Length: 429
Image 1 (tube, helix red, strand yellow):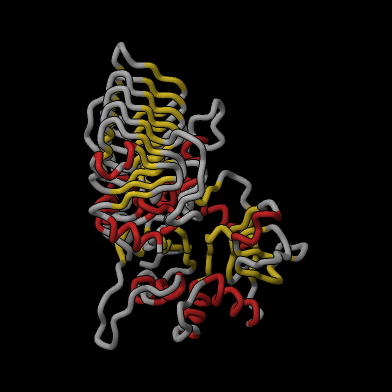
Image 2: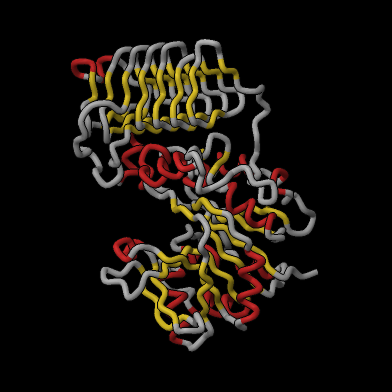
């Protein structure tokens, strides 16, 4: 039995621009929206679109991602034929290779795709927040008799150099493609979502198999254009967010709690599914105050939460204030602590009377491109001692003690990497 279309979900990325948030976990497994993980969105899009066969390509620190996906039960992807399959790099009789590029990763799994003999292959990234009906895109692909359809969306010309840029004729046929150009020829940005006719994809991957770091944007798309293949752009005008930086990740979470959210998690007809913990309801004590926030299951709130996203099992003690921040699952904020414009990863412990995300901004001394946006970022399993102050554009990871904070403070722009320092430096390299 053949499948009309299968999906290949690229989820092996390191996510280095998320800094200490991805020191121990792959970017697609990072928590989002107080309940979900980033990979839940493309997986949910698949099953909502009728795509019931998904290969998930993992590589960087895959344990938590693999555990989260399991056999695919939350997404109705636990199937005897098809369903979800984890596809890590593997050793063969001839060689052993890590995935060295997006197209190379797909090439190494040709055998997996061949067993379903698909007519079409959907290529997805595991690190974007959006809702899309891939069936509508497939209908567009068929109507154009396309060899490849690229999902695109208009972006401001000033931001176009961050993306692959597609140039089309009046029929939306692609005439030119630029990968992250310094001088963009247009403003239609590739979303990293592709539908290939299977025979065309297979031929291109085999032809380019010796290409170093083979990538769809850098190599496959130019190859197909030069070969005269029919490439079309499918314009998407819904919400789509690449949460690849701390700033965009924080912003996407904050957009969930707008008075009229641009991205709606509560639509009945297009649910986002996830592997949920078995937790009691959240508890809001009489002493607590909440204003425009998301609070996850099992959270206990005794202090004040404003304009924030609070994950499952978080505890915020009496007198503590969390404002404009993301606090991920299992973290604890001590009495009278103050957390503002910050991201706290999973299982962080903040001591009482501590202040995080305060003071004047200063450029980060370790990696100013990553630790920016005025945010304080605390890596998972970190401990922040009582009574210290942490400024803006800062990063902390590890079990820190009072002696790590000269004069009781980590000034804006500073970093403290303790027991996880090797992992943190590897991520930020």
